[in-house]
Length: 353
Image 1: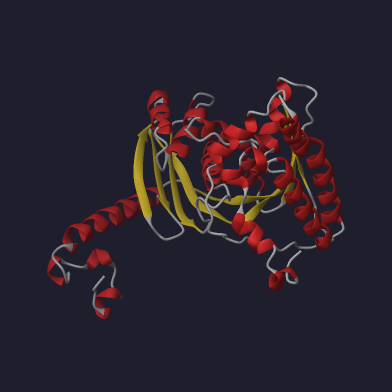
Image 2 (image 1 turned 60 degrees about the vertical axis):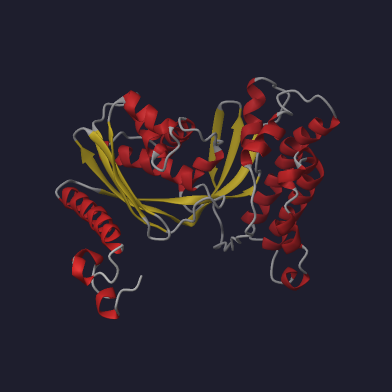
């Protein structure tokens, strides 16, 4: 702000006090200098260690939203059908480098806007990590995963430098799950824990639910990368099947600039489980059970033969069933006026499936 063109081309860390245009900027400039120096020190340390390069994308749910947690209730009601989700990783995500540290968990991140957070240090002590995870702060997800790793495996510390992010946060693309899988993968690769992708997913899931976040198991599909995956949820069992496409599928993800309260949605819908009390709750069972399984299987067939028009029609059908059977139970959060305005916008219909 207010820097001359000459100074704007120079790194902020080279500006001296007398070159700052406003005295009030001195403290901020000093803070930026300290933060950048800390990251540079961290990068110097990592340059002397064996590092691994990592990338974990976000995820998008094509079909089967909410059936992940619904399928988990088969533990208490075997008459329920397993949940089925058709999901895919995105081509945007978290880029990081990681290496060992003798005693601490040290984390930095740079978000999509270039804002730097950290370095932040945590003691590799189970209770300290558990307390950090419980705060719900920025690095609580990484702390939660580190706790889960520490109580299962013989590891010391880790340096995790998330140096680039092009995945938008808080946009329904599971940026928190991506951070958890990133942390699990970092420990796995640095310490050669020989975890499979499913093992990384499991640690990422348990790490995330160590925080105040109560995610389902679907979000961790980001561990598979940008490819479609069929996920089946049968009580505590999760099955994943990677799908092959005959041609590249391009999806445009649109920001509708709306709001929702996921906690309220889950509170209302989970009241229908494990055993329904009335016809409205039985309708949710049908929606997330038989109807969902039929639509997901039809979507897989459409993907297999590259019929994008059929896939789009199935998405429309799934939304119609959701509006009819789920929205009445939580109209304040599920009416989705922005979504329906876009779907009804005639000039747009000819360009989309």
